[in-house]
Length: 322
Length: 259
Image (cartoon, rainbow over all chains, first blue to last red; front, side, top):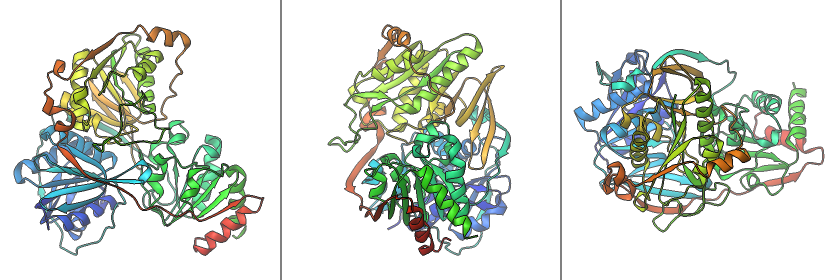
């Protein structure tokens, strides 16, 4: 049972479409009769083949012209909503995705369901599932507003699979009405040097919590182990709040969801806030001083010990193998 | 410079969360200031200090007339607050919340800048800052890890996956700040005493010109169809470190063929 046209807010870094976008397109093919995408890019032709391969028959393109991608995206989505009345708009729970859907929501007066981990069609309604209380409780919600129904999906909620279609037809949206929201200008982009994979893409994630003791210990205890395992480093909300590492590393409810093959929790007690972001990992190793820490209830291998002594020995042992 | 900070009072996140019979988060309990909001309050106080004048005003909404969390932020140094409080606000979604906050910002008046957290700890939609900005007709600059105001403009470092972008907009504007970017001050004893007498303008949605179908459950236009327990994950092997636990970890990594 499908539900009309699904419009996906697509994101890309140059010609590389984000994996969250490919996940959304895959789901859009399943729930929709037709799939189209909006992309904010000066070179939509570069991403149209991949967007088409994953299901977008039409790629509506808006040129950012130095403005915020999400804000331009909201105007672009509003323009497509006005001209072709999609039933559903999907976007990822990303920085730009949240900008786009929030401005769109207020602009067209539609509520938005956020943090969805699944989306399905039920009769003539759309039902979005989200996780609460550390992922212990799943809540299904349906929108009773007029269409389009706006849903924000957490990355890594479903697998991306190509549909094999040809490149999407690029349609330029031309000048968009942004009002004062268009006055926010991107003056400069700073790319910080990073080794290894991105947090949400990594096969191995090593995260640190309060138990690493100090901001200075994050490098030797978390980054170094992540590097040796060709993984990415993450963090709990507690150490982000403390200013030890930036928000982009935060794993959890208010942060990223990761589902690596291996998740190593270093000095993490396992607050529900954190568990919801990582308990979908294939395998979990936890190292924590407190034997009663909730993290051990989800760990395949739990080490009751001080992370600041156990982890350096692990790092040393791996290095010694050469 | 006058800064308005949107703050939320939430059930203590350290306590186990509960649902009301209508499946929404139980909120008619003791509410405290969301820790996420302390960064916005601190940032606002620092910006007003740097500007050499002006004041920080709080806006908030609650289904009951809870003020404890507001007093915490007033004790940090905010001058006054607008609290939109009414039973009809229960069940409000992010857009309904944004409508209330945007009207409360207009009621407070005179803002050069509105600060919010990136997302609340309990609802964590992350959509309210953009919705408030759109409703006010102001630019929104989200996920700020650094905020500067000069010459009628706000400039931020906006967190990105790869690093950060420098984004600038003319005032007035809405800026959401990430946690950890400033160190929130602890309220002093003097601040706590002073907060007791700072004005809180308590009003209702209808005082703000909002009708019952724009807020609360009816305004949310959504229906919870089911609540179910998720499959549990099984705990595995747990060992005490006796000085050799690292060997077990290394063997485990070998079994996973990661080393």
